[in-house]
Image 1 (spheres, rainbow, N blue to C red):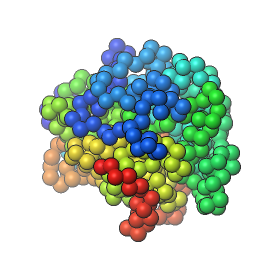
Image 2 (cartoon, helix red, strand yellow):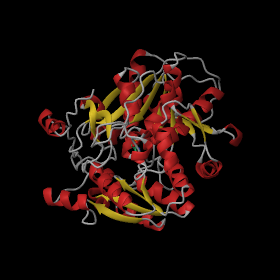
Image 3 (cartoon, rainbow, N blue to C red):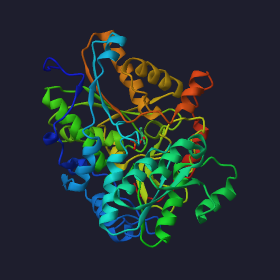
Image 4 (cartoon, rainbow, N blue to C red):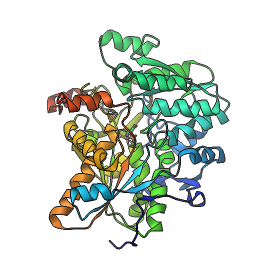
Length: 460
Ligand SMILES: *Cc1c(COP(=O)(O)O)cnc(C)c1O
């Protein structure tokens, strides 16, 4: 691909060049993502149905398949200025180390205290909650990044924040918890005895280390039963992908500035928010027939929603209190092996990305945990940044693709999302260094148990 000379190590944008709107990729999808369904009536959820759970403006965004651009409100733009634009880095040192003719770029979203891209949506969701005059919000957090981001956003706007944290992370990551408390959030390990759904799960599965699906049920129960509260979610939802489009928009503006055209765009996929955000404007071009890119979603072999899941309507949470979504899913009862270190543990996947994957607009690949940490270490040693384990899934595949270029001599341009830093993941790094880390791949029988919980609702 042609490109201008003298690409700086970091491509920054001027304040005047920053995106002023979010891009809604659904507007360009010919086949729209399937609507959320009411778990009781199996009818598409209306704004009225969603009102007890979510903030009004966010419901509008959630249900809007048509508006292409959403202006970013000024208070959110002001907050973004604290840590955006995030740098687009040319990985010159990694390229040299790999001796690859490929050109590798990464969009680094770890340059804020929460340490990940999740702040991009947290600040938007907190803003709309405040606008509506709410007292506070509830949420779940897995590895803790979302809870941290939301705590920061809530303290900025003076909102109360209750976080249900998956128990295994609560215990493994006490420092995360303390960061959240520093920003004024209250943090409860999930499953807990503070909710009906938590007590029911504890009774059925004593000693469970929890799951995101279970923590979601608890947070929703508290939001819908406490006046002045709503529930917010850090991934999977259409609104979150909309807010995260700021990642892709900045990336595209930076690349365009230097005439760089990517061949391959890579991102890790938990619920799909960073990947969805990174690829949005590129996918838009692809959907409109203006350009073509290879887009690769990377997921852990231990939680393979895209690559081994089923594309079906399923519950979004273990307690089955949330609307149902059509997505690639391992079943809401699927609980990934506790030995898996990253935050990519959710059983489902964004409906937008699920539809795009189903329609052949992107690929998906799984990687095993130890190979991910090897890639993380290789990256850290030359590029300096200590990557989050989640982000390192993308690093692994970026390196794999760069090594293929080395074999073929192709000078491909690879862009990947480096979603965050790994300072709170040092227990996992320690296990890796001590040779105690294992690769767990669920058997077909393991997966069958999860699939058995996918309801047959007679709707394709
Ligand atoms: C949460 C998180 C992810 C995965 O979530 P997505 O919604 O799939 O983006 C990836 N990387 C980091 C650092 C995270 O915190």
